[in-house]
Image 1 (tube, rainbow, N blue to C red):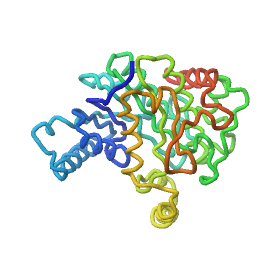
Image 2 (tube, helix red, strand yellow):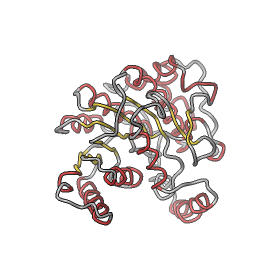
Image 3 (cartoon, rainbow, N blue to C red):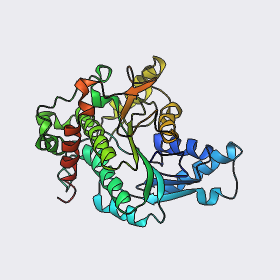
Length: 325
């Protein structure tokens, strides 16, 4: 079954940044129902208003806008919160955009009560619980996108080497989830983030094969200016200021970062691939070169690790082993 252009979409982290921009673009493309997944009711309501204003500005405001945007509360770092959100969702959605995430705050290696690092909890484990819950409840009917990153393959422009797996065993991937894989580098924002996105791309490959009735794709939005992801909690004030006002503007100027509009359109393009031939299920897409520009299938990168089905299944099993801890 190939996913067609969706009539309803749930987007995590949709109250700001790329999630909000994705919602805006989908609304302007006449998606009938957009569910705003976020942690705060106040921020969710503000996102509703922002989206209604965007519709009005584009000359598309009408009475249907009163019901077009829904707020669904969830904290992806809290499994109970995610399960409650699944139960709360009144009617199924056709598509899911797993956009929410971040670098894990000031201490990304700190463990949650499920014994995974904060980076894994917010970027991956919560999304695994959400995806599984929606599928089991028959509340996801066509497609899902996971927001990947060029960091997953290693990227010298981000000063990140490739994640060096040795055996690709379940145990090795479990050590990536609890941070022991990284040793003394477990508190490094970039390294744990890259490893988490690496794991996620493998997980998507596994679930795509497990659910052939759904189209499940990893797509990196690319390095994006103005999202706040590189201004995490715990980063010194001076460093945040320099990142926001000097580093990112310079990256944007020299083509190493792109606008939210351009990045979010990658999500939209995948969702609206009506044949599934351009963006096949189970595939990881990211910038072909660097951090921006045209995207390409990443299965040929890094010794074809991303298309290794044994690695995919072991990574999926490893991640799920932490759900009921």
